[in-house]
Image (cartoon, rainbow, N blue to C red; front, side):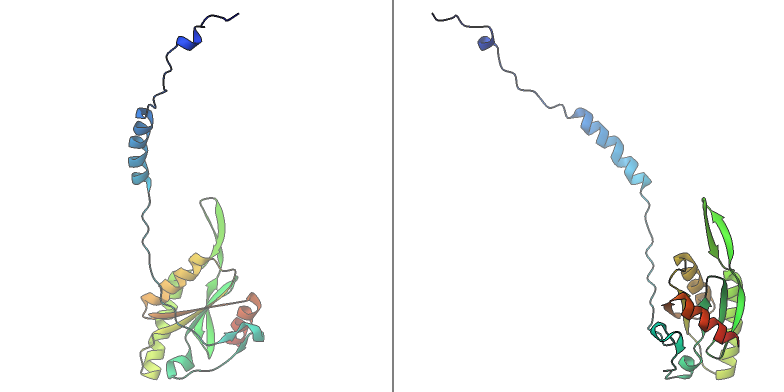
Length: 185
């Protein structure tokens, strides 16, 4: 025997409508907030030149491939984990020892870059008076574990006194410390 029609078959089928208003309200609030909180970076380009000097594969041996007086004298800054030096291929002078700084919950080593700027300026003046040429090149020799901020601050310090063509040389700690010891003798 056939059964009668049920109530289900007579119901109207409704399509669910998407309510986009809450999502649009959310975007209207989030987009201005994101634009206001975005930090816009200033990109600075540092032009680095290829340098001669420490050969990390030769245990710190110094090669002299200089082609001009400026390259032969080779003004340099040597940054070890313990001390900062400034000088030439003929000798180094200690700028000062590293010291710890605590900033935003982080402790790290840094140097006295104002003293570096002063001593690099005096060295450049002495070299220019002695050789009668304008010294613009300097090599910043550092270990591979040196903090990036320290390297940039050293480059900025020597750039302020006229060394406008810095070179960066990164070597193993033993090579850099050996160079510092040879330069002090």
